[in-house]
Amino acid sequence: MEEIIRLFPEGLQVPLQKHIAGRWNELQEIRCRLNKQLEIILNTRNEWDTAITLTKQDFTYMVNQLSEFSLYRMEDELREGYITIEGGHRIGIAGKVNTMQGAVKAIQHITFLNIRVAKERIGCADKIMPSLYHQDYLNTLFVGPPQTGKTTLLRDTARQIASGWKNISARKVGIVDERSEIAGSIKGVPQHNIGTRADVMDACPKAEGMMMMIRSMSPEVLVVDEIGSKKDVQALLEAINAGVIIISSIHGKSLDELKKRPSLHNLFEQHVFQRFILLDRKQIPGHISKVYNEYGEIISEVTEDRPHAMDWGTSFRHNEHVGRI
Image 1 (cartoon, rainbow, N blue to C red):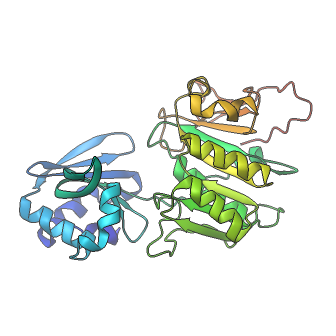
Image 2 (spheres, rainbow, N blue to C red):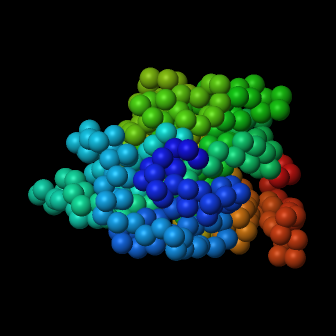
């Protein structure tokens, strides 16, 4: 976590390290607010570091560290509201926004920072991989509210497909990483392990990036994070019609909620996704609640009394593959 510690002024580094000592694996976010105590968000709770109150001088130091003393150099990232640093960690930025003709020009006075800790959990997708394969990989959508581990699972799924899973040979994987969260690229170089046959289109809008990736890199599998707009859906449909497998994620609490969104209507009507992996916040991030097939039938479910066990539903589709997670 040296990439995160070095963002703070030297006098604050030791107190921060002491507060989080032995708990880096639980850390999700560090929230910094001008003239306020540091907020530490862990997997199961949030805490306040009473030894650290961030001053204007502290913020100036941290912003200079983020931008390498050149905010102009990072103008595009600032307009998006975040900066990705070495290690794939994403720093959310808020404060006084300058606009021009109704569009965001820059964030001038940065007074809030949200350090989102990137966690590379190699093997976290092991439990779901059997459900994502039947003769070939299946079009899959990870569904869950924010901070339920969708991107972490998506990344490890991409890694396993691109490196070869069990006796399945490695596939060409194209990752369209609009927000630099899947691969965590810095200057085009992935900071995370995304597999041996993966290629990345970094910081590119999803819809355009999917078409660019298909034309330039001929992927067998496309991985894309947080779809939602009509443009995203149209690009997904075009990719599938081109014979490309889609592995993606979306914010949502349930399939019923997703079905009500007009932009997603065609995806459900055409049964585009053959697997829906539903995540929730009942346990630690990455907790899988249910797995559905393309018809909305539950093929596996976590029981309430055995939070780490799975109940296996019976599919009425005789061609359905039900892999154990």
